[in-house]
Image (cartoon, rainbow, N blue to C red; front, side):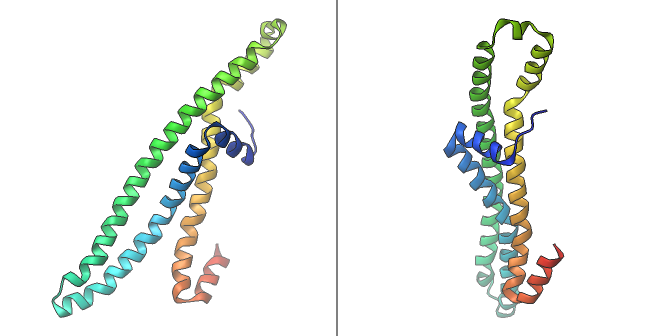
Amino acid sequence: MIHLGNAEFIKIAFGCNAPLTVGVAAVRLIAALAPSLETLAVAGLLDALPGAVANRRVVDALTPLLALFAILLCAYLVQALNRFLMLKLSMRLEDRLKSEFVAKVSRLAYEHIENDETYDLLERVGADLPGAVAGGFANLLGLAEISLRVLGPVLIIGRSSVPAALACLLLI
């Protein structure tokens, strides 16, 4: 098992491919905002429906309904884009880290490679180095995503009642 600090996961992923790493982080954070946006769109639809039904003008409810469908479509596309970008980042990490690992192992003295304990250690460390880095980076992004998913409803509540939003924050 490889033990890296949180900053190392970000540094390694960023060092491997900075634009891809920023893209993955941006997509994950946008995905975290989707549930709050969906809540606001549903609230807008529920606010518009009684007036639309009373006036017999369905067109008044069409804009919030289209906004809700657009948000749901964007959420689906963001998830697909996130999977693609994470796969691409994992492939780049694989290419970069495996070649660097092999280069460093090739510079070792022959007696280290012939030593069974050292060889076993090299096998364990090199077994899934790119997967460990990609997994750690994904876990850090998951933590940020969960934080935004929790804070989104608190901000929605804060629009109506600041004391209620503060109480929600204290309960978290």
